[in-house]
Image (tube, rainbow, N blue to C red; front, side):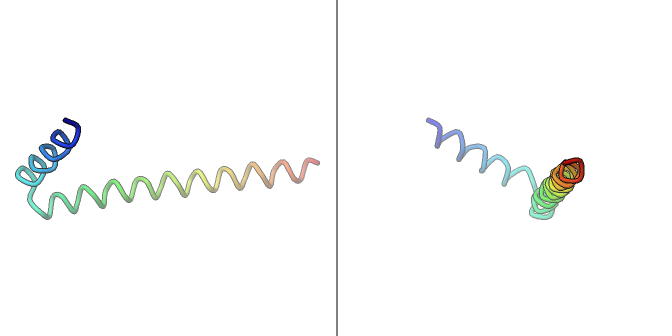
Length: 55
């Protein structure tokens, strides 16, 4: 049943989105994940280095 739901969602997406819209959606999601990951890494590095100076 789960595979049927996944396949039907894929088919629905392919029928409703043109190829350019699908690629645009994928790249927008990738861009936001990239931004979030970069910010998270910078914050973690800042916390590590700020604790090192206090010790």
